[in-house]
Length: 383
Picture (cartoon, rainbow, N blue to C red):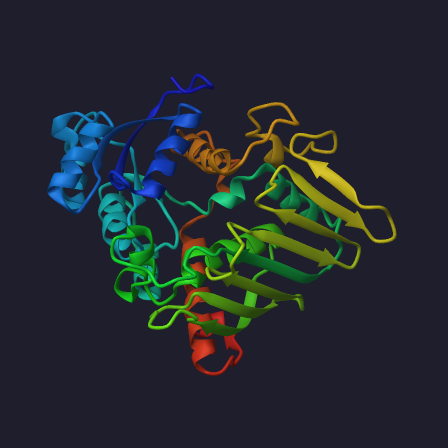
C-alpha cells in the first residue's frame, strides 16, 4: 500500500538503464510516497544493457523487455499489466513510446521536453488515448511547495497586475567540448537526438514553464539570441530571450550551460504593481515576498504564512527541515497516482500536461526562428 493507504500503481519504465541519471531520479520519485510498484521495463535500446539493467533493479525476467513496442503489447494484454509508464529516454525517443502506450490505454509519465520536434508534439496531442489514459510531463520544479504558493499569491492579486517576469537557469557543465564517452552530454548536444534546441530545450524550457506556471500569463511573442560558444557545437549552449506576455507584461529569460561557477541556478522573479516574489531552486524552502512600501517577508516552506491547499498538500516533514529536488519530483508522481485512481480532481490543474508540452515546443521553435532572424519578434501562434 502507499503511505496514505491507497493501492499502488503498477509502473513500467522506458529508458533509464544502468548509468542513466534521470531514470534513477524517476525511480526514487516513484518510491518516496509508496504510490508505485516498478514491475516492468524496456530500460535500454541495447538488449544486453536492457537485460542487465532490469535484473539489477529486481524486475522479473519475463517483464524485462528489449523494445518499448514489445512492452506495450505484452503489458496491455496481461491482467496484471502496468497501469502507467515512465519515459526517460533522450528527446527523440519520447514520441514513439508515448504514442504506443497511450494507444494501449496505459497512462504516460514523460520527461521533458515532450518530443524533439513540434510536429511530433502536435501529433501526440491529437491522439485519442485508449480508455482515457492520461499524460504527465515532468516539469518537476512545479512540485515545490513554495512555487505552488507563489502561483496562488499571483492568482489572489497579492502582486497586483504583473509587469515583469525574470527567469534564469545557468549551469556550467558544458563549458568545454563534449566527448562520446560522456553520454549525458553527447546526446544533449546532438541535433538528431536532442532536437532543434540545446540549452533552450534542456533547461530553458524549465525556466519558461516555471514562469508560465506561476504567473498564469500566456506568451504572445519572443525575441531570442541563441549562441553556441563552444567551437564546433551544433546546438545552443547559451540563450537570451525577451518575452511579451498577453496583457502587457514583459519578461526576460537566460539559460546557459557555459556559465562557469553556476551549478544549477534556476531562479524566478515576478513583479507586479503591488508586490514582488523572488525564489531560487538551490534554496527552495525560502521565498521573498514584498508588498510595495513594506518590509520584505521571508516565506518558508510549511511556515506560519502557508495555508493554501496546493502549497501544503504534499509537505512531508515539518517546517525547518529542507525538502528539495527529489521531493518536488515525487509530488508530481504522487498526485498523478491520485489522478490515475480517480481521486485527483484537485490536482489536474497543477500537473504539467500535453498542452504544456506542446507550448514548450512552440517556445523552442519560435525562439530558434527568432534567433535565425537576428532576434525578430516571433509569435508562438505563428510556428
